[in-house]
Image: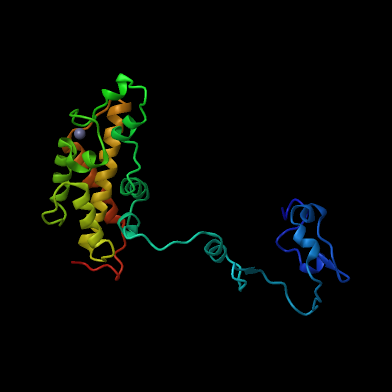
Length: 243
Ligand SMILES: [Zn+2]
């Protein structure tokens, strides 16, 4: 809008407020009627223009994308699981899948079945593409499914998850307990977990929508090598505890 009326970021307030009058572009006044009622100001020739942002509570702060975004967004208290999903070493596409899993928002077959009000037989025939034992669900895929459970067992040998059973609620509870930990072993557990979940979901989809399939050992290898690569590129800051 600034460029459309011929202004640029160098335009001065003095070009809009001339001889004691506001000279707003007509287009702007039509769009923002409030401009027509702005009080008059006295410009001091010796002051420089500066960009400020007036917050919702009327405070003037220095203009920055951060201050504006913080002001216009709706903020809520941080959820308990925030650091399970998002942490500085996380792999973004894995975090995205974890976010969906935590909120039970993946389009799993148990959810798709409930859409089937017509009793369509194809919906009833849906079964987990990894083990073919029944429809998949969040609980099934992470990691009660025979295939997924073997994959997670292969992966978790490398991580210190104690005796946590392969059930989502137990794993999730465990992750909540270490969510804010800076210990490198805990960061690795979170990385392994989100990477395993990502690749199990990826393999499930590949089998449904493509013909290529990887066996359990191959999937464990992909997960471990992805995490290994991530660890190699990570800078170990002094904030991480190397234990
Ligand atoms: Zn299965």
